Length: 505
Ligand code: AMP
Image (cartoon, rainbow, N blue to C red):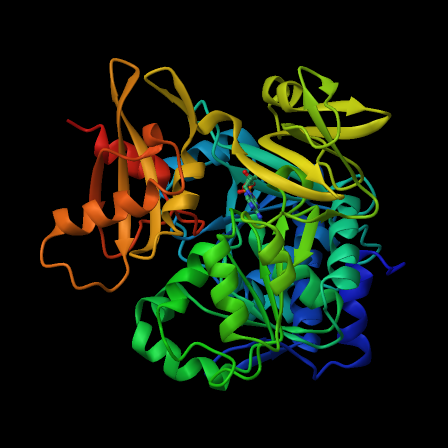
């Protein structure tokens, strides 16, 4: 358990060991010394030019310059809001109208968006920095209950919700990951998730606090798949952090295994269900690595539970459990605000020190989801779950339940069984509606290699195998074969996009 603040814990590497690498790219490596120097300069600038109460936007992609901006903002007492450079203009405008920032630190080229905030180019600031303003005095970094970062997630109303994560929320998460998830000093982390997605916090802060480094895998690199797998072994990444969907894409490459990529020691997954077949394949490909399935919403700071994947676990559970709850946190399974008997399914409610104080400037949504339970801050996840031998089991979203001919069906339930069918690599099922009623279930399928000449024969074979696994009414009526399933900007399967596609006519 570190007794430092996040800022102190990171700065100590810059002071004691300034040449230690922090950000490793093909062409150049940035050090902790550089990180400290640049974040100090940015903090000094902010101290002179802004009010600490207001958040700072940091705009850019996966690049080193984002790090000194995050740390510089928090050193000067500001919460920061990461906005990824791939974000559509309208969404940025909505975020700005909710957050009302005073300053935007632009690492990338700021798009032409009208705003009352002052846009500061980081390049220009750092170039002129050492002479243009004096070193900061009496900085008051973000601590305790003060907000450290704000991550915007999609809201049901169409307006993004800004989840406020405090310094102590973050500290609770980082301490847990460092202690329980196989992280040791100086490890090399993959950085793949955009900073605007809280999965990125799973690599960023544990790496920086433990003197480790980040190696980015940008969209451009990922799009050049052939090259990616040529360079991957040379990157010497030790800790892999991604969504299961991204891993499934990587597993399509046969050379992605422990023999070709020796350096990988730890895999951390979060953000969506880890399919049983994917977990099994990973174990087979990387028999010496440690693989963790972790679970949690942005509102409770990245993740609150984790379990190591083993052959025994996979044998015992047909659906991969989402883990043992971290020590300082309690998960309650509630139904209509009452705890259900152990083992029964209900809504997962998280209570403890990593639960957010709520959504920025949105008291209504905050009141709906956040409350105090047994004296602790608590959050209703909207996830269904249950406990089995202290292991939390995920049971789908409360809001992705459909009814077909009166039968209640969880769409994830069908996906899960379809993925077990031998002709299926990956699948997502969506409902086709007619006047708000489900008419048909449509399966989007990435098929495994097969010898069927005609699609309808493949469909027949899949239906036959699936009928062994699920009730008849859960077998989709329509199958659409695709090369890969579309992903959201955050790397999850874009089920909503598929729903739109199916319901467009
Ligand atoms: P986000 O806030 O984007 O991280 O999304 C949080 C939601 O993702 C959770 O409420 C769950 O519905 C889902 N989720 C996260 N991790 C897992 C997991 N390991 N297994 C199943 N669902 C997950």
